[in-house]
Image (cartoon, one colour):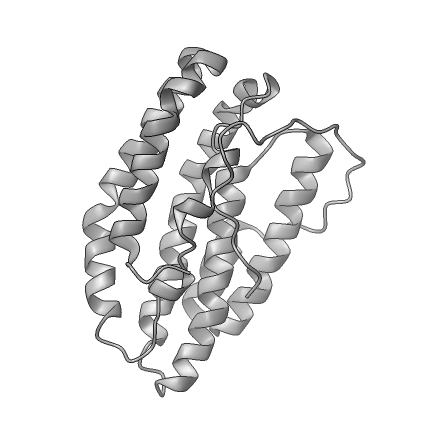
Length: 208
């Protein structure tokens, strides 16, 4: 796990995405180039909010936020992705985004983690069934689930002092899901050409 904070994590992501852009354009065309630029623009736009979150996180005696960040160096090498065949649809019942936001806002972090796990299972199953990848969407949901699970632990350790920050982190991830879903959808033709745009660009998120 990283100890550098969200700001540096985003800067690392920007550097990685910029470094891979030329290769994606060669293999995936203009669409891949534009989508890579859109992702970098979003990451740059998030830097001020990341700085504020880092500042608040450092006030607490637990590694909240920092310990949940997987270093970008653990992202798969470019070219790792290989398209797979579609499989039968076994997607569980979907937990809607509005329900997830409501749970993250009003219920316990433990409950939010369970709901997020159900939504992740659905996203993965639908991706397998349709052959349309959802790497950014799943990455954000997995990050939110990890933050919820760790956040519940931190809240117990700090007498509830970190609960509000953890809740904002989870809600922040959920707020980005619609944009991630759009990028994933637009990247489908690139993925169909065997190009791992986004797929190879996110590090694996561990189980909580």
